[in-house]
Image (cartoon, rainbow, N blue to C red; front, side):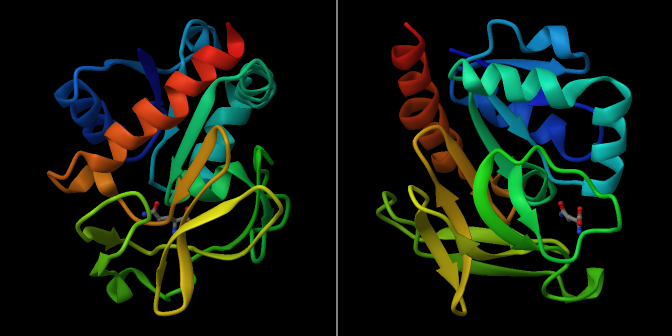
Length: 197
Ligand code: GLN
């Protein structure tokens, strides 16, 4: 299984290490052509406005959208969740997203950097709680048809999935817990390989 990690800005190194730890082949994606042959793509946390600008500069929008139509799975964490959302409640004027997953997100929903926190989360499909690290995180305000809620915290949606896409508003790559990386690769990416076959 070959998984790309968008390596323009943010916590991409940690995702690459987590993927390698579970035996997946991880590619740091800096140019759209590197998406070829990827079964899945992780868009990391960081700063969504900065990642959006760099994606635009390098021509990523159309290529990611095109690869997703061909069945590539995608997981957005934190800023990555904002970037794959169809709707952003309080995006900056002109802030562009990939519009891939039918969710509405609110940026910086918990407040400032100093309002960052950790919390144990019950995640559907995992038997033990997962420690969520929320750093100036968004939350998910609503989900469309076909999008399943995987976890909530304090009544707010913090993890969702559809058939081939997943969004978490926290940072699993900053923990030693590899369960969500395993879940993405085995449940979403392998399915995309079957669908594409
Ligand atoms: N607040 C950031 C944004 O809007 C997201 C923070 C993060 O990815 N940890 O892009």
